Amino acid sequence: MRTPPAIKAAELLELAHHDHGRSTGILIGEGEQVRFEIRRADPGADAATRPLVLLVPILAGGRELMGLIAQRLVGHDFDVAFCERAGRALSPPQRSADLDDLFRRTVLHQRLLLTWLRAADDPPPSIHVLGLSMGGIISTVLAAVDHEVRSVAICLAGSDLASLVLATSEDRVHDWLEWRQKIDGIGIDSLHWELSQFLNYEPSHYAPFVPTEKVLFVSAMWDTVVPRRNQSLLWEGLGRPERLDMPFGHYSAAIAVDRVISAAATHFRAHCR
Image (cartoon, rainbow, N blue to C red; front, side, top):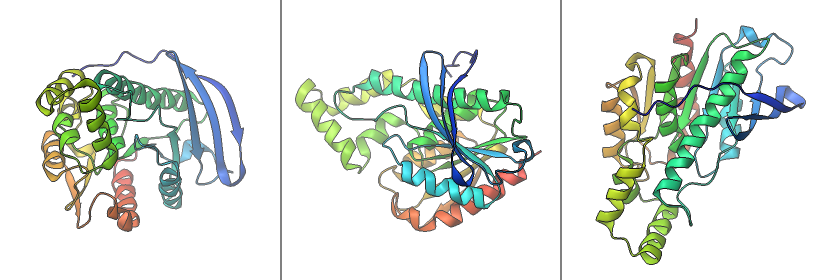
């Protein structure tokens, strides 16, 4: 496992408060600028009385989805925070080393936000993490390197990224693969080797360092974006944690969002102080 360096400090550059307990801000630290959002379950109460859930976004975007999930968690009486994505994944002119750097920066952004939250005058009594799709992959890494994360819900994610990228049904990834073959003249076997060599933030390297009892694993039985094999590899690597298996595909699983959020909230509550 590659252990990222300790975070020295996260400096607040800007903070704005909006209606309905919503705040937005900018942090700087470790050469990065991080835009973030916080939603409070009870804006008038002390934040130190409520657990907080960090949402880790899908790397293709998904701001509306983050807002939807955040509001549901607020309804379960959690405060919620999330960063804007560090960049777009698997798109030209990105290559494997660029993808690895995006993963590194995404993990770093989450850690900077957690560092700032914990240093606040009213830090949350416990912090939990929910990651969806690529965000679930990042959440695996985050839970392994940040031992203060109390529990984690890893949703619709998998490991062995080199094979996942080549096997996924995601059109955007297919476009990237075709671009790499056309521009670089690289074959599938060589691309598999390249991804294996450059993706240091491969979740299978980190999964054994996440305490199994901390994890709720949510998978979709008919998922072709994150194939079943890759989901099971991550679940096995995490020590076969509690698992919620849903009879949906990757995107149709949105139908069951309330069930997933309810299960995650129950899991987080069980790990609150």
